[in-house]
Image (cartoon, rainbow, N blue to C red; front, side, top):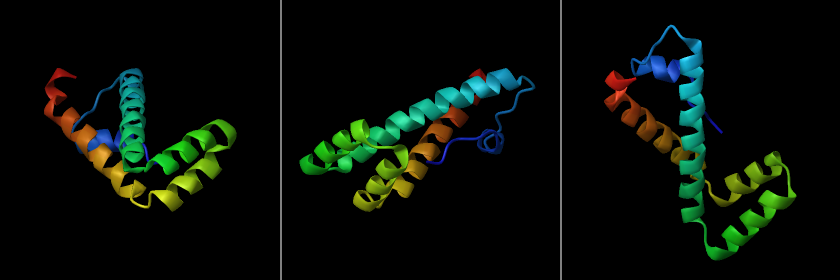
Length: 98
């Protein structure tokens, strides 16, 4: 999964001399990203897919789960990029308070 990086923050004008602050912000943003993507992809699943996905989460490794997701939800890259764009847009709107 693609994550939000320091370069993404620089692109929208977020810079600070304190790496700890940036690292903390990135951790928070990427946690939100994972939650939002998870919600978006589960909304795309039918009941059978959702049951299978939940079962796989408990019994398999990340690579197998990722392969299953790519096979069953082919629009995942677009979902991830949309959520990144939304989060960065929200951040840019509030950049002055950071």
